[in-house]
Image 1 (tube, protein in one colour):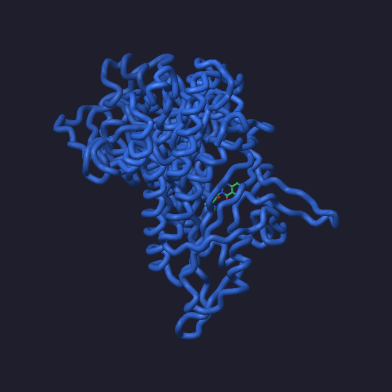
Image 2: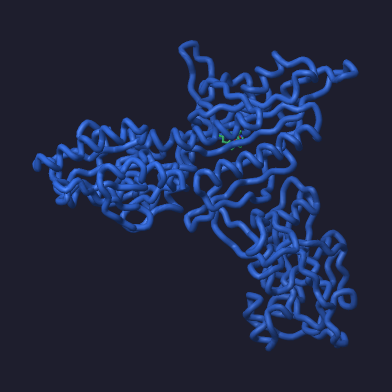
Length: 567
Ligand code: 9G3
């Protein structure tokens, strides 16, 4: 393609609202333009890259027997009312009314639409398992769209849905999807982890998020430094075992700790390490009060507390409930002499403690030399703390490190959440009506494009992985006014096209500096420059990512490029 005929508007400066590299570079290099907050146009070279991501997703979906379809973006509210989601989702769900004043959702996701189709068309177990997918713009009215394509209000998603006759069959589909997702993100040149995630509101059981490691990621993941283990920070189990202290338990005694609020204050004041104290936090777990204990240097993981009680709601107890139940404020709480209605649970690390300090449930008073089992009872010990860097990896291999991640994929075992509410049943091999078992599987296609840029750029622009760039070769003629340069460049352009090589030809009447700067911004993996040695039939070839460059005779170029892309 000749740039003199194309719309690729480049900018020297970062747009004011662009805080991260992918947002800055995609705008400066002429890949995208914002239309409104969180809403973007893909310009020609941006559309070409988006199509490359789409096609990798499409190939990997079809490889595992998922069939592509297309559902409407307009979703009748009646379907969302069947599952109750018309009301559970608030202003994030974009809604419009048609000319008859009938209500529609602008498609944020399509569980309801696909289930309404399948319940009408699938009657027998012989038609299962069935997996379909679409690649379509989704609409979600994010409260704070930010980071360009990473959190938009209209974005391209691949969403797939599976319908299975049993949980075993769902597991098989889930495994295939898991494998397909790993292939997609590997082929996109991404350093990613499949992260064990909490199913949250989706009502399913297992769920994994595919996270691209990046400083600008919104999520924190705990991953092993030597295996593929990775988990959402809320989910990561702690497998550390604790040596019971051999110290003889001393006599517990009260000590004044005026104005000492934090674990650090108390430890310093009483002259011990933070881990020789007990942290006590009062929670309301559904309609019960629970005092959760951890070692002073650990943090209570409220998701683990919620899962321990299989609760719907876990939140910090209010100040007045805390005062009413324990007689003191947050800085002086402890497990000694706690009223019946308050249950005491503790992280496993607490069980190994002897002669430690804890609040005395009196303002500014603590106990020292307290020992669990001797000076206070614990109803239940459990894994209640957040995993920390340096902890052993739960899979037994390596040590845990933290990283921030960009969620580019999410796979859910939905079970019967939608099929039950929408009465999607099939006749099993005994002729008995059974509810279908579902899975749903998403990839943020436009978000993946931005994540690739986050992981592949330098200070001059984007450095696309070989197979992800909008073109394979960027051909520059330094001075089109010089006849021999223009001749040679035109000739080279034609021979590259004939050889089936995707080439972007900068034939503009622009200064060399502008052409080189734009070329570095675009990030096309190989640049050919027709310059002063054109008269000898020699051109310069430069690799964008490494900066390596050589000079070649024109007749060698096509083979060189073909081999370079085969490598
Ligand atoms: C909504 C809005 C936002 C949403 C949802 C619904 C997230 C919603 C979860 C999913 C689950 C899967 C199919 C593809 C893979 C992910 N944000 N989710 O359901 F109405 Cl406004 O989308 N859906």
